[in-house]
Length: 411
Image (cartoon, rainbow, N blue to C red; front, side):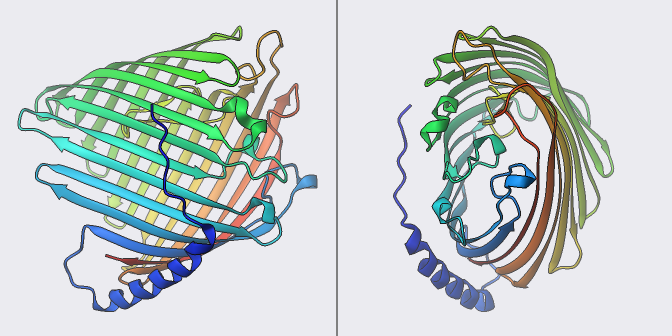
């Protein structure tokens, strides 16, 4: 896999560029035509205050306010039977007090959806992103540790409008941390998948499939092989609800540590849209962090290598109050079992721990003009450690985050 290098964007150049784009987008918003261009260009400004930047115990918590000035570029263009979508964003993040954390994050996502006349279709995607990780295990006080992830995937489907259909795909990713302290958590992942779907009745789709993943830790001389047998279903009984579920028999084997896992993993979901302006999603998932694959988006999920198994319950709601005002809320609770068997190397007994994290978020957004939006939000999060035999795997914390933003788009 060739390493992808993106053009360097100087942080100090983003702010004047963003302000220029804001002015252009605001001017265009008042004179925009009804026809929407497949291209867009925009800028944003966000201010965020966190009561616990490093997600540490309350006694060591440090608060700060960060200014994020960003640019947005994108395209959504049909090409005959195909569709090309691409987006790029970058933000210059400046901290008021913890200036050592100043950084520029970016995210590039591209996808080509293709379709042929012989009922063969699929997609090809690539993404590259770098930012400060949100996992407390990767936040060290005083260190600007950035996580960079490059990934690519391809997925093909045969028999879209028939009772039976078949799918197959592959994905690769590479994740690396900028700080040498976390180099043992760098990973190279590869995944293959194949399955068959059947639609025995209207509103019911069943799938059975196989997955294989290799996860390498090059700086820890360890490799993980994962195999999954998947059974999934999508049920649309009519009305406002859609249900989906997956259950998988998951087996993992490590090359450098005596840890072989056999687990039942899976997910349950309920999407409810009783009215055009209200939608709710309830999801329950149980999975390991190595080789976790999202075969809807065709991407491998990157998570802490310390997590052996995790269970997450989440609820999200979106409500369009008026044509200009939208509100959203989220509630989640996650429980993890952890150890450091993947990164300690051979000859050392692994430590273990477990924790629980709960979070609540509320956001409101207002459309000032057709292409200009502003909004504010607040998030509360709390982690408790239920058991631990070694420091460093996890720690309890409380954090409250406030943010307000403005965004202008030129389409």
